[in-house]
Image 1 (cartoon, helix red, strand yellow):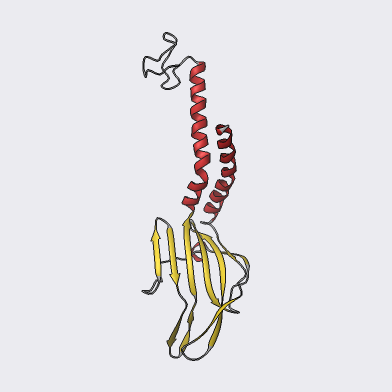
Image 2 (image 1 turned 180 degrees about the vertical axis):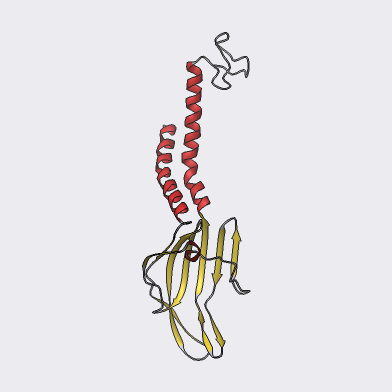
Length: 196
């Protein structure tokens, strides 16, 4: 029963593993961005120069260069990206988190994983003044997703290969553990001591 459950779980996990592999390879050729509809107004703030701005949250998923990024951006109402899927160059679809980090940002980048947080803030450099949008970016490398979805199929394949090898050895009257010829000593293997 446990063997059958493992086979079913491995087969179910194989499909996402193959999908991740295809998207991973495709991400080096073309980048993709999926924008979702912005949520309603989150808050209204007043800039230091007296103008008030309304803000909303927009989520997006970015894929490219072997990375998958989940982005939550706090944008000015009316300036959000249109919902839908767009293609871009792989370098433009995903962001390097640490390249534009300032002292007020929080970021982490290790083994392809990344986290970046920037709060919305105002700037006033006459004659230009405005606001930076707030971002939260979570980066997950495709190698991790491939390993996570491919673990069960790999475990099933190893167990299946081991079981087949033992059955072939028993059919040839060999020790199932080490492959020693057991025609002269059928009860116990003289090489490894295994009982057949």
